[in-house]
Image (cartoon, rainbow, N blue to C red):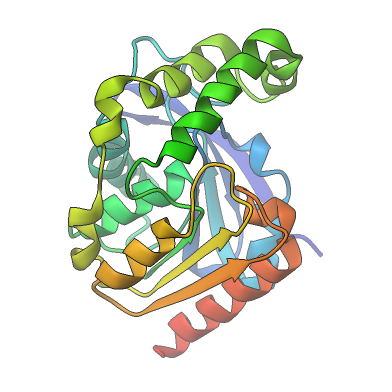
Length: 259
């Protein structure tokens, strides 16, 4: 039987954020979505992970996404730092969550690494296809996404998940394609990520190569597990859900044992 869920709004940095809470035990899993994600775009994955682990879960849409307040200004190159160092800590305080397990996908994985690497409390991190630096393949695929947004039904499909799909898409796409963003790099945070870390990536990821996992493995300051998946693109939780859920459940069980 699936755990009870509750959808509400929480004010963070003066903005209303869409938050879904799933009942369960400790630790609390906090899901951090991708660059075009939202609460609804996770689908039933958070509930399935909560069920497999017995943990409570929080899923939220960042500012400019989902049903949260609409983006009012262009994003800056440090938008993931702002989320990790300002918005996420405030959200956790508002929800009285002291030591979460952060489950981040793509941008969300990067935000989790910055958060922990800045000395904020985390019991563990699950990073799904995270970025720690910008690769040519990332820029190429994001440029292709821009073309798809302008020439296909992609806006209509995304509009089911976002209050203002144009502003959501441009906010993500424009900054990743800005020349200044090529210098974006968060490797300096990795040695200060001391909590256990599970990093997962597919061999067919169109937005990043295994160089991302290699950099994390070499530089992370705490215990690390790597899961490299065949027949898997940029969304391991959608392409290989059974394997990913089982891996997270084992990871959380080890966290609870202190292993």
